[in-house]
View 1 (cartoon, one colour):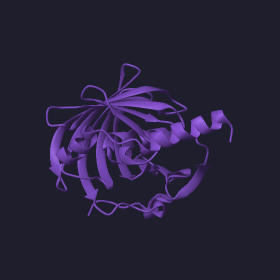
View 2 (spheres, one colour):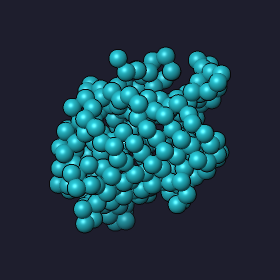
View 3 (spheres, one colour):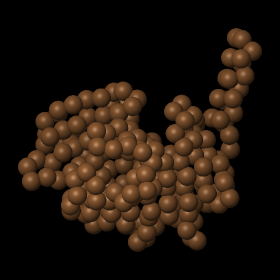
View 4 (spheres, one colour):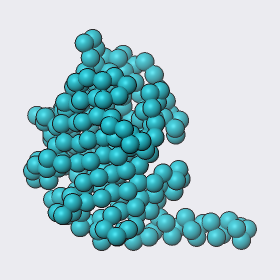
Length: 230
């Protein structure tokens, strides 16, 4: 191995093995513990692209599996990421697949994973305490996020890159409030989003279900496999 390759290997190993800041563990404890998976039904006021009131459902599971369903007057639109492939469905019909690392839904899944905190404990994620905030870097892509907390050490604000192509992409800021105890955890039920400084959407949780056992990748392969709230 060349000297340059040796130095790079040492640097990558240092990132993967670097100790997590106590702030991360304290924030997860303040919430009430880990959050392996979460199902939510939402009412969303969209400001840009398709303004109006929408019904959404989301499912998130560690490490970054994600499903987003948009209710329409016809059949629901489903966008699923199983950790490897992004799939789009119109109703139950598969209309597109994308296994590329730049698939837009991957960026949305990563943003949700950052806000959910537990994924920041995984190897390969660089996390530092920057004066009471978490600075997060995903080394392979260089994506950077900032996580800020309120006085109870609950997530209050997350900032980072997101891709909503073909409509927009940029820096997303999410502000969280209306905290309620859900499944034994303290979780925000309202989120206000701004993209590159402009209001994007306000999201209100109607129903939320914490799943303590996580979800396999197969649950994100088709809409019929997605869990709902009991």
